[in-house]
Image (cartoon, rainbow, N blue to C red; front, side, top):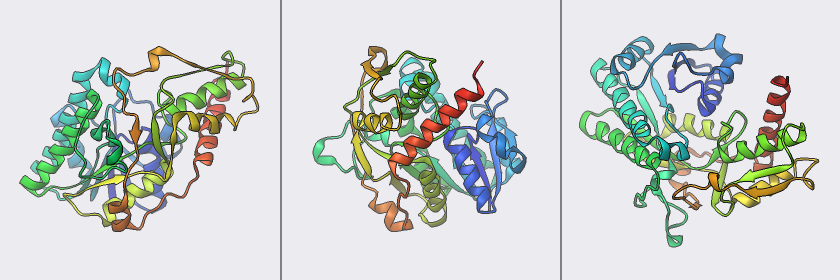
Length: 323
């Protein structure tokens, strides 16, 4: 299989590239000249990188013409919810127009790949308690510009399937994390702070946002295995929730993470008002029966291992970058 991963230099993209290479697939990936490549440094000689700016339609068309993939995993996005409040227009443009350019390039060139469109559980917004666990048929209540952008991306992908027969399959992934996750995301943000405290680079105060939100956690390595099965076994035009099997509050997750540190009794936890969102989604528990029925997938990696691996990632990073 020849696969193209948009956003290959990112968190999920780099893990997916590793997984596909392990399957013996040929891997192309999009990047921008300014994209950090730390996540793919160890596999750069095994993949083909194609310079591509999703907001430039000609650039996208050249990329698709070069790769001519059998499968496209469209992961590139502005993916940080708080930043979408500061940059709503840029978020909408990147996630909706970028996806539109990709789909239009495939249509114009005339190839017929399976296209995995990575939507998000954020499209559901703040659900009611009686709507949990969340089905794919749940109404959209987007509570951030990022969520709105993902509704647009989700729907334009459906429209291209209905109008042109472009073989899009949409996933709505719930909370997923692990090594290489950006430091602004909750688990990684906590893990980096713990590692910095252990290294004496930060006072023993861990700064947090809302700890009462409920999340269902999934390891990124289980997530990319799910994405592989999605393009192998799922039906174009359909949408599938994907998520883990460990549900708890952010506070409970933090306690598990702190238990991985020898300094757990010395670390104080303080709420930083700057880390609170203007509007928040506090209840995200997926119903993944549709996806499991189609693929037989299940999450295998315990949350405790995910947290330890993430903490060890930051411990190693801080040693490498120590003065």
